Structure formats: C-alpha cells, structure tokens
Length: 329
Image 1 (spheres, rainbow, N blue to C red):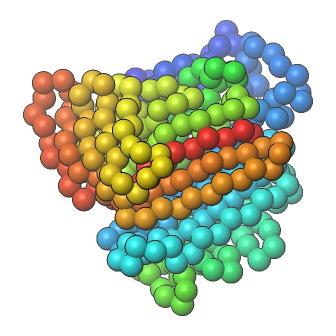
Image 2 (cartoon, rainbow, N blue to C red):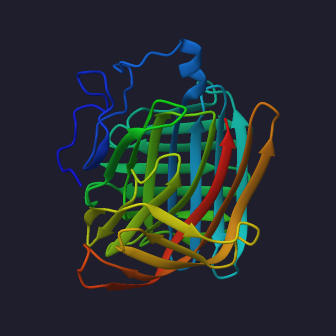
Image 3 (cartoon, helix red, strand yellow):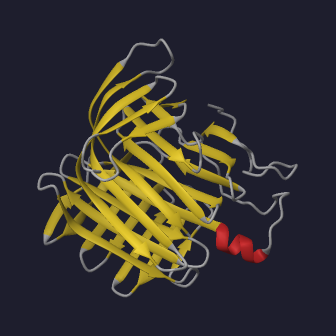
C-alpha cells in the first residue's frame, strides 16, 4: 500500500493516478483527464455517493446518498439485531442538484445531503474533524457524530473502469460514534458503536455489477469488492494498519442470500465465513434504469493475516455486511 497520497486523482499527464494509497485526499476531481467525452456522456456516467454503515451488538444502521447524474436516490435503514428485524427501511428518489448534493470532498469538507417529502438526510464535516450525521424520515431519526481525528489511515483507491473511464473511492475503517437513533418508538444509544464511511466518485459504465463485503472494529476491519473495480479497493486493517489484499472471491447462493457466505482473497490473507442475521433488499425496474440489490447484515468469523506466512489471527463476531448488486444506471 502506497503511503504517498497523490495531490490529485488525475496526474499532470492527464492520466488517472491508478493505485492504492493509505491516507486522505482533499477531493475527487476528474477535470484534468486526457480522455475526453461529451458533456452529455459525463453527465450520464458520473456517479458519486456517500455511504455510512454503523452498529453495535444491538443494531446496524446503513444509509447512502447517491447522485447518478440524471437522477438521485437515498436510503436509510435500522436493523434490530436482537429481533432480527428491520425497524425502519426508507428510500426515496429525487432530482440531482435540487434534492440531493454529494460533494467531491470525501472526508474533510465533505457534505452530502438529500431533501424530499417528509425526509432530510445530511452528512457534513465539522471543524473538530468529525462527521455530523443527521437523519429525519417518517420512520427513522438519527443524530450522530463520527470521529475522523483518531481514525486509522483510510484507503484511497483509483483505478480504470471497463466501459467507463475511471473510479476513485475513499474508505475508512472503524470510526468512534457518539449519538442516538430512534425507530418504532424505541431509542438506541449509539455511544460506543463503530462506523465506516465509503465516499466514491467515478465515470462508470452504464451496466455495473459487484459483490461487496465490509466490516470494522478497532482491532480488525476490511473492505472487499468483486466486480467492476477489480481488486483495487480490497484492504485489511489490522490494529489500524492498512494492508492491500488480492482478488476477492464470494461463494454464496444468490437464490438463498441468508445462508452463510464464504469470502476469501487469493493471497491467503483473509478467509472468513459470514453468517447473515437479516437483510435489506430492493428491486427496481424503471425501463431506462434498473437495479437488483440485497445487503445482508450479520457477523464474520475466520482468520486473517498480515502477510503470506505471518501468524493467523482468529476473527470472531465481527459485525458487517455483504452485498450483491447489479445496476443499469
């Protein structure tokens, strides 16, 4: 993993700064790309989003604000791990620029917001180097702060995209949380929970598919993706140190996504079994666009290691998610 963060995701010669880096970048900016496409192509293919996942032994919360160029969408859910039930599951579409804004700043100075009938979501960087998370929908309320100041080095990945041009993502591991959430008349104290942020920005193909897994706590965390971005964003954090991982493999039954999943990397550094507790799913077909999405919530167990031949470390009860996602957008 390269510790020398580039000044920009586009090099001086107009080529994307492909690679995996440990550390923050100020913003995603594709304006200097040598490869030229029409204004309309860039408008339709420029996708950007902020995703937050956070949880503890009682709940898991997932939310995202997504600008796909010609439309925007947002979702937020709260999963009760003890009852194995979604207490809140909200989503809404809107008009980009009017109802949703996703900044090109991934962490520092970041701002992502969505406003729609009966709903407001906002993720905003604050002067104390935290992210303020504010959610108000008819079924879910959240007020939380995510601490960036004490975080381990995040991943910055930049890579080519078949059928598109390039993609960049900044992903954190465990962030300390302060705050609360309310759903179905129940209030959950989030102090002591752990969160992770995914800020992504790319010029992507119209048809995009991926499998994804993410789980984080202070001693161990990881992010895996198999699909449109290759192994670019595959990373393991051990005691706060980011370690690049090889290609990811997801073994699961797509017809039975709540059965156990086996996730591993071809370098032998990660080998885990994921046991789902429940899931959020959504299928849409809007003629000009379509998506199939399922995000199981559960826990990972197995082994990880820092390098080939290094001692194995056992992982138990690591809260996280997997995802099977196909989009025509």
